[in-house]
Length: 156
Image 1 (spheres, rainbow, N blue to C red):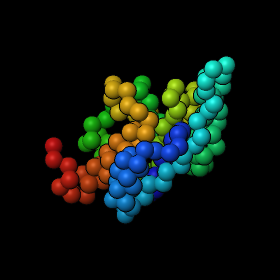
Image 2 (cartoon, rainbow, N blue to C red):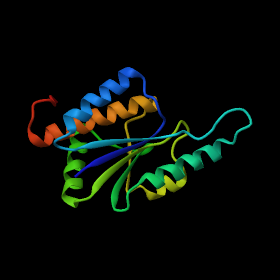
Image 3 (cartoon, one colour):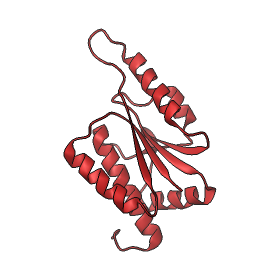
Image 4 (cartoon, rainbow, N blue to C red):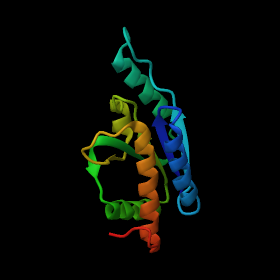
């Protein structure tokens, strides 16, 4: 099984890029993780934010392979503990399908993206910068793989 992180936004700060790269490397054997960065929709004075969200949604949907299990990161989604995520990962592995995790732009996901998602996952009630969500996602996926393999990384 492979995972793809499709994220609106480009040019992560160096500290986020380095952290993400570290967890991506750690995941390379258990759950290879590919990052697909998409340009944000145009926002600003005289621009229509709804149009930007729609454009971002279209780009996300276009980046999805055909037969993939889609998990949208969304504040209204279901929250999972690290143990819950590990259990989800085990179920996903058993399904035999690859995974796509979706991070929307600053205004969230377009309705079409949420409709396409097989699941919605919330990292909790905090508002996090989208770039930081990438790092948290990669770390939690690594934690889930270590839980499943009995590695002592997770100390609950």
